[in-house]
Image (cartoon, rainbow, N blue to C red; front, side):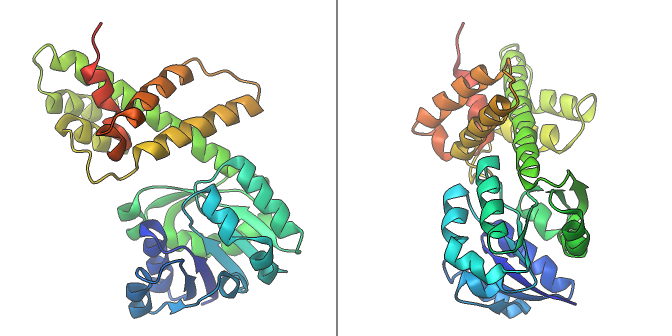
Amino acid sequence: MSTIGFLGAGSMGSAMVMRLVGAGHDVLVWNRSSGPLDPLAEAGARVVHEPAEALACDVSFSMLANDEAIDTVLSSDQVEAARGRIHVSMASISPAMSDALQKRFLSVGATFVAAPVLGRPNVAAAGELNILAAGPPDALDTIEPQLLAMGKRVWRLGDQPSVANAVKVVVNYNIVHALQAIAESVTMTERLGVDPEQITELLASTLFSGVVYDGYGKLIARRDYSPPGFRMELGRKDLGLAQRVAESVGFRPATLPALVEVFDEAVADAELKNYDWSAIAEVSRRSQA
């Protein structure tokens, strides 16, 4: 098996490293803080102390928190180590940041691929991620075995990396719609005396089967918002990204302003802002005509 670099050992990154190690790969892992690295080292990963050490592998991956983190870690100085190699960003970053990274890697003769994922840490640990990949076809061919060690399907979305990041934004935009639809349905039926768990089960087991209606429906029905699987502020960030994607293609989504209003109210609330993004349901529950 190959030697792979991996930058970022948060809850998602650690699960992905474990999958790669379990598949027999020699993984050089870097993380800003040392705490998450101990169990990875015990599992067989090799800890490195500079991003450049991981980037010097023929293929490296990163799963970093946001635009700011990835811009700092994958600086021009560090990226120099990837000359002639392939780097795959698996983080949910903005298309604009993805474009900037592509230029940065190309400037040193490296190949850049974007491959953001659909799934939470438990999904990553099970190797059940859906991976949205875009980049040069030959690079996608090269990295597909590693991607399939981390996920159940690779969705090839063309040769422009930032398109994969835009598609991830659009998927999250659909999730936001589902959260708000569940919230409004629960609010109306709850006020009619229907058990919220019954209505969310009805929705998920009949016309709206799938992980979003099933999983988030249960969270909303039970008001089970903590600890957050995806923080409220990140949901608001994704709405901002959706707005930028829409503007880039000359489109004005009809529902976006209403969703922004709901999230802004939730983020401004001292209690809701600390919860999972599904807690936007409480904005509907509190509303009065």
